[in-house]
Length: 98
View (spheres, rainbow, N blue to C red):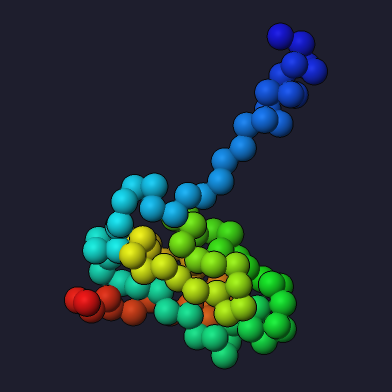
């Protein structure tokens, strides 16, 4: 396979996050992320300026909207969004039984 053929194959291979691929996983979590909208860069600037929570969420359950929203039916509470939030607008709180 030459370089051009390989390039075509690589360009065609894309991955997108799929919400709910592993089923409803929200019951697994011990902690859940809560967005403090007053601290969120996207809300402050009224622009999708940061969106790192959306980018880093491995489950694809955070919307890229103003304000961002979390689909708790599929959020496993891993805290990756909170760890990657520069202004610290996401707090991990103890999940209560619904």
